[in-house]
Amino acid sequence: MTGDNEIVVSVRDLHTWFELRRWGIVRVGNVRAVDGISFDLKRGESVAFVGESGCGKSTLARTLLGLHIPTSGKVFFEGINMQELDRKGLLDYRARVGFVQQDPYGALPPFMDVRRILREPLIIHGVGDRKEQESRIRESMEDVRLSPPEEFLHKFPHMLSGGQQQRVVIARALMLKPSMIIADEPVSMLDASVRVEILNLLRNIQKTRQLTLAFITHDLSTVRYFAERVFVMYAGRIVEKSTVDNLLEHPAHPYTRALLDALPDPDPENAARMRELPSGEPPSLIDPPSGCRFHPRCPHAIKGLCEVDIPPDFEPGEGHTAACWLHRQ
Image 1 (cartoon, rainbow, N blue to C red):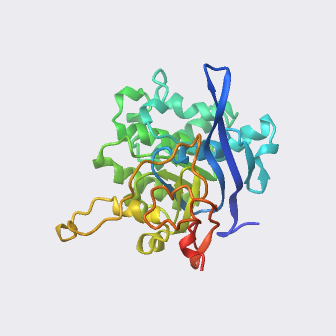
Image 2 (cartoon, helix red, strand yellow; image 1 turned 90 degrees about the horizontal axis):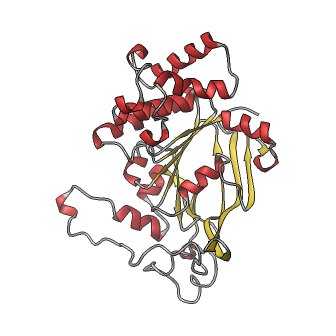
Image 3 (spheres, rainbow, N blue to C red; image 1 turned 30 degrees about the vertical axis):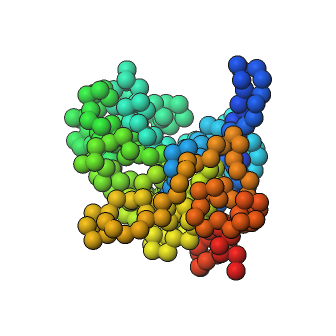
């Protein structure tokens, strides 16, 4: 099956927990970093996963990459169950999924020059001879606007600016011609002056190559210009899914409204506007609250319901779901 509506990634009731031990011996519980989420990603679309630090976004990204083994649930990539892959199958899978890390300098081996960094994935996966590898290296460098390539091929990471380092990271993610890119906070470590350039670069590459792009971020202000759909995460779960415009104009979950209210507003006329900011801190993922995990901080919590029962996904609008009892009718 091919086409714009083809499902590339299908996640069903995914849990990724980490065992917690005291002194490395006594088991004291589990960190429920990802705790029961389901979604589909279509070919050629850009989806943003948004939430506070510690909500499970990066754990989800690493689970999709095969770096963390799910505790339970299923992840299908192009119809293949990832949990059933052998070592060779997992290697082939990782060739189909590119990864753009948060810290570009930490992601690049300091003892390799740019040419070697970009050739490494091709060597590992046995792609092409030296001439074809050189051609791919130059093509990827042109795609990320490290041009002319001759100016950068011999340089080591410490000789590049932060923006140039991130372009090398993106070029490396493209070397094996993946069908999906996972970008984990790709601009949070960069100067504000180059963030828009890197975001536009990723977006243009995604459109040109028809890649599925999973964009992990805590910054809702960048989502409008970058993604088509948004999944809002809180305490290991997805609490709202919608198209970007619909979510920003009509947020349905109290947590999403709180995220939007927390954004700085440059308009002085809105300075006195009441903002619905939640009190307290996100819950511990070792012992999360019962029912809706946001209920201890929610100004609209329904007594006797929100703290007891886990809300299912309700549909406040077409293509828009929110796990909130306020929408039960």
